[in-house]
Length: 317
Image (cartoon, rainbow, N blue to C red; front, top):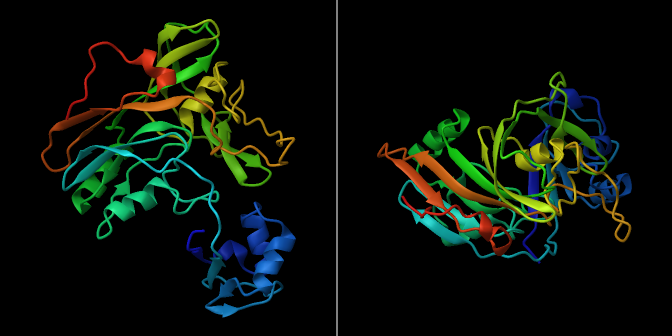
């Protein structure tokens, strides 16, 4: 069991006049109306630090706190490898299955929590994220200079990111570019997730991926994918939109649209954190925020992708 958590938020203008129960049901549909009503009546949800009733009407500026009791988190691999470390930044390689940030039932079984245990006084801050099922390099800032500088590099698309992906199909061109907008798509339990959308969709964001074939097998193709943007689940969505979804991806099928079919055994809807696909953050580069020198790291791929290691590449800093 973990130690539980308190989720705090401020009521916005859009929620003015809404009941406390309706607020949580609308924003957090992963739980049923009866579950939220029971939590409110058990005083697990506080309004301005005080218990409230499900029918209490909310006003803008009020403070909400949901005190989630301790729970048993799913087992995941917790070990990670430090590829590079100095006083400003940290580059680590995480395994598939380990979430980077808390969410979806994970709190302590995350890379962020494990880093806090290793660096308790000043834990590093992730500059970007990897999906739970994606292995490989994660860049983190340690000093204020690095946190702001690396965030700016990420925003200005100055951080070099190369992935290895195992896609279905063998008729892929040797080299190709995918530019398909990514935006929000309704999800029955999460509210929304990301997928391929039309360019004129209100939630659409430009996304650019460059792909190169490294190896073809009987039914699959190993690819090197360089992303110039960092949209959520971009490679999974882009390859699926191009007709070549990642082998074993439980969510994104041909077209880049989430395949929202509940699990016949558990009744649960598929979510982006479900594992099963092969995607590895292989190469990462940036400009050191203090020295101004170019930095580059490589994380050896897992066995399923080891044929994709390009000859002559070595880890460097």
